[in-house]
Amino acid sequence: MSGRGVTLAVMASVAAATLALSGCAINVSETRSARVLRGGEMQLAEVNDIVIPTRAVNGVYDAGRKAAAAAGDRMLTQQERRDLTAAAAAIALTGPGYGAHVDLAVGLGYRYDLQARVGSGIYALSLRRGFDVGTWFAALGLRAAYNSGQTFAAYADDIADWVKISETRRLDGQLFGQLGTEWGEWGKFWVGAKGMASPLRTHIDTRRLGGDQEDISTTLYHAGGFVGLALGYRWIHFVAELSVLDAFGHVTAFGDEYDLSGVVIAPSWGFMGTF
Amino acid sequence: MNGRWFGESMVLVTCALLLTAGCAAMKRTWQFNAAPVASERLEVLPQRADVALKSATIRFTVRNKSSAPLTIDADTFTLRLPDGTTVVGKTNFFGRAYDQTRGLLERVGWMNGRDKPALAPGASLDIAVAFRQYGRDLRRQPTLTVALDGLHVDGRPAELPPLVLVAPPGAPIGEDI
Image (cartoon, rainbow over the protein chains, first blue to last red):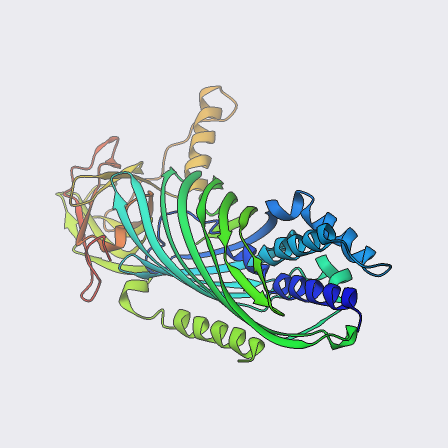
């Protein structure tokens, strides 16, 4: 196994593995009013999500890819190794991508509602408690999610081809707050803040490249806010929301530590029916 | 942990929770009760009062208890919450639209006027009124008062006392529920 082969294997492994774990971004959206559903009230929404990790789109990832390609022909320079490392970290944060999910929520009474979310590798349950603040509504909620990490795998196929990733486990725990108002039966507006902790673990096998295999685990953190709007009438509304979150964390793999920090911008839109 | 198993389990747990919708706080529609009211010439007998989160539908029978035929008109009604909030209720949309259209055509002379059929002594007439609002939970009110101000007899207000709808036993009361 050559030195550059190992380098490439390590970088690609970390990148692909953490990418596979990074589908969390579609799980950050709320895309619903701050008004908690009343007992027996039901809400069904189809939501589309785009994930824009600023570190990945600012060229870091492209530079890393060029370095990885060069590694096949010659020894990497120190700068190229740094580029590759940076790219791996950028992908590790989260890869750009697109996803969709379906939310089904029901009001439980006593100002609580429960929401189930399924789609694009996400399974989540959320519980909210609502409060009236004059003519505004407030809600505090928590969400537990399992992320299969399959959403954006195709994004880095050129890297993922080098490695085998298995036994992926990722759980997301969220706390969030919302404040919003509604205009008659046609408009809803809300803002909110959210924090998310995501303990993850996966197994990376780089033996195809003559490398090694390792279990990696770490915890990613996201914190940020969102603002949303719904327009429609009575039962059906078009919803749009923008989430901006700062992500941070570190992971150690194959003896090196990778920084996972950066800003994630995630616009979401879809249709929401309330019955 | 198997991811697929975990995801499916979460969905099943959710479904199970949704299926517990039989608890009182999650019941979508409650049937309120009301006592009949009467004047010298009319008697109003409540038949059914379905009260949901944002809407209430009241069906009642108007009986002519006088010895003379009476012409009955139903217009808009007013539902009042215990805190004084009022909600306007209307009769069937298509019936109102038909009457209004016919009245317009009669005024412009495209149709001949007609006398509204009178309610014979002892006969009765069914009326349904729907109230709709947002922002309040009608189900959680202990009482809802329906003013029969939209009921006219021979062109004059019927002067009936209001119908008082009372929540059934077991219904959760209070809008924090």
